[in-house]
Image (tube, rainbow, N blue to C red; front, side, top):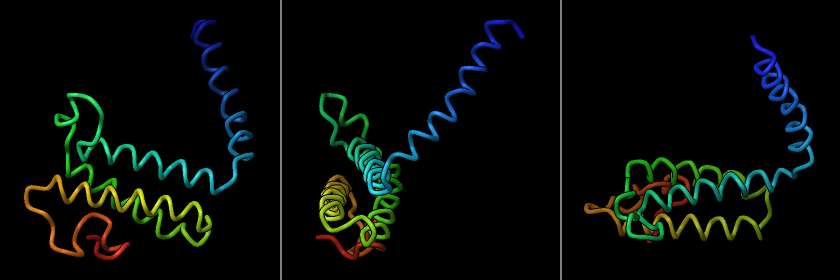
Length: 124
């Protein structure tokens, strides 16, 4: 291993304790809401809601379904712990994505069978 590689490996090793200290300072509600926002953003892109002319090319409802299911599970299970203010905005975003998914579907799922509806109930 060259001195350059040794330095790189050492630098990466130094990042782990710093990252652990940094995450220790973050409240659980912030970690949960950040994860939810990432899922929402990815699902929105996969539902074809991105800005720009390439939005239609990014439509992938199979991927969107997976992301919305994960988001619904996270939001519904975390809601009691993160408080109504945070949960309400996440539920609103989730519902908007579920409706966008239904609208983008050529053959919409039966009521109660759309992405995340096993967690949220039927969305209409």
